[in-house]
Every structure is written in structure tokens, then in C-alpha cells.
Image (cartoon, rainbow, N blue to C red; front, side, top):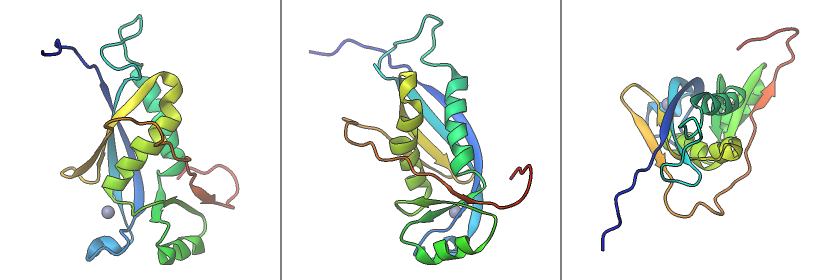
Length: 177
Ligand SMILES: [Zn+2]
């Protein structure tokens, strides 16, 4: 017996931000502090799956995905350094400069692990009340290379607490990074 054909609708929103990082214990130049213009593609499906859409015909309005995800990225990763919690040397260095903004990751900040963090931790935290689920996140580190994290199977029990950037900035007045 074959299942009848069915349609799965999803939408993809592109997001951009800049961040610095280094790869702890990398054999080569990625062990140095450096940065990227990152691009994120986030693919979203209706929480109920299938081809469920609202009365207008949308899974969700594109602008809401942008608003929620970009607000989080701006606050926590944009113009910040992403540092692996085990990389105590990099943490000590980034805490010496002021102003400073950094985000401690539970694993090395590779494109793979950033995609995984956005899929498993950030997207569920910021999108859940929209009735949608992020199914796939691609993190583009350069125009040529991206890492992809895809949700498979039961997602129950995957929720982790959402961390925050550490921001130390004693400058006066209005600031834009
Ligand atoms: Zn890099």
C-alpha cells in the first residue's frame, strides 16, 4: 500500500548578520580571531505540518519570521564574538576589552554548530507562539560554504535554555554598533 501523495508547504527567510569567532583547537588559521558576514536561511513549516495555511493562504507572514529571528540575532550575535565555553583563553581576552559583546556557546562556534543552535534553541524559543516550526537552518559562512541543520524525528525534549549575549558598554549616549 502506498500513502497517497501529499504536499508539505514551507517557507524560507534569509537573514544577515556579522560576527567574530575563532575555532578552538583548529589546526590552521581558523584558530585566530576573525569574522564573517553570515547569512542564515531558515525554513519554517506549520506546526501541524502538511499544507495548512491561514485564511490569507500563508503558513505565516514572512515579516514575522524576519522580526523575531532578526531581533534575536541583532541582540545576541550581530557584532559580537561567539566563543566556545571551553575556550577560556579567548574568553579572558574578550573580557579585557571595553566595550565588548560576546556570546558563550556550548560548543565550538562552527557554522554547523551555529546552525544547530539556531534550529534547536533559538527558533523554538522565538517562533513557538506563531504556530510554526523551524525545520531547517543553513548558516552561510562565505558565498561558497554553508552548514545545514535539519530537524528529524520527535522534537520533544530537545528544548534548551536560550542564552544571552554579554554586553559591557559604559559609553555615554546613543550608540550604534
Ligand atoms: Zn571563521
